[in-house]
Length: 599
Image (cartoon, rainbow, N blue to C red; front, side, top):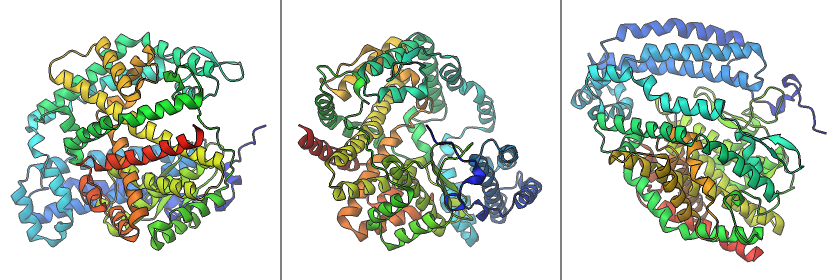
């Protein structure tokens, strides 16, 4: 019988984060909320005057920083309180108020960037030379001004701003179909019970050890999408057309270039990823062959790709034990990193266990003026231990950044955000593989690692290649029909998975259920971030202190440089294929090790 969840008030304090480090009381939150609401009026005096003088520019930027930090504290506290127990009416209200004032803040500051773009680069340099205090804003201002060639006249920009709801239509329509209207049939589970199939439960069906359960769920899910195939094809095609339209009107050479320009990522990074993956697809084919042999099937099908190769580890690892293992695993990072990790473990950063009403999953968050926080729902499994390492990677990324950078550069772009978390996971994995003497647990770990490569690196790269092909077709004037997209997707699966698997026709419609495709050219960052992290972890293990120091310097720079330059400083050049090749070598070693154990 499942153990009943504790109420929030009954969870021991030592397993709860110390959120009072942000605001000692809710009354103090309310007081600062009212102060911010009143102070938003201070932006009014800068309207139309942002670029009048160096003093005016500095004034509005400093005010924006000061009030942004207050908003950050308010928003983080309210939502973390809400995440502790979503049934708490008081914190539902605080969260709603935080959302509302965030909108008010956005409206109050919406004039700043447009008015900065009216300045010339020479005028900005003149202002920075005139006022030393503006020097810190140099990268921030350069990033705004470099986009000027893609900013149109005020009249056209005003017209484009009114097309926002129309532009959002494809994604909104897909969301309504995928989340509200689509209905899946009941299927039979492992216990022979008839149960509802949902998008959420589909993964657990695919991980079932019962092949009939997997096959039935696979067919039921994709047969349902096939009934909507023409509507879904038109919806996605419209999204691609929208991407192409905006890239052309903003004078980009392609929709890919437009999507990558926000973080100044060269198109070559995207192209190198796909090129490197294609050169190493023999490794994925080898993995598929190994999977087929380990499952002992005559024919491997698409619904067999997530079936367990090794039984789940029954090893129980308590939270306290997990902390000790992680501290040992991350010793190559250096004494200062370990000391900061201990601060996090013992300093009220972490909310450890599940309780009634608590938000599911895990995350790292926090506010610049205090320290990072981590939400967990720990359950004494190996996977939970990796989750701790992952989220503390995010937390220490924030801590190192906050110790060195002003609030202005305290965040991280998506391109680098997952690097710090994955480096920690990779170091933990290497430590466990070196120290375990249990062959069954070793096989479990190798399988766990290989599955990460398959899902985070290869699968996302295949998605990225699909996106590149669909957008290129529209840019060349080719209509995106359902039949064409199914054909493209089928051939990609053949290429990526090889001859040792049956590419079931139903998989041809998989593209129609991927929400990330409506945020164009986003998924490639999973592959790039993963390969960068694998390369960095190997550098730290092989080179020692010098690599660890470069890496911690990367952690400390936040958003003060473009992501490509940040990674170059750590020793990773994402404009080349080397990081991808390095990651592939690790994958190959894992396959070889598993082959020796089981074949």
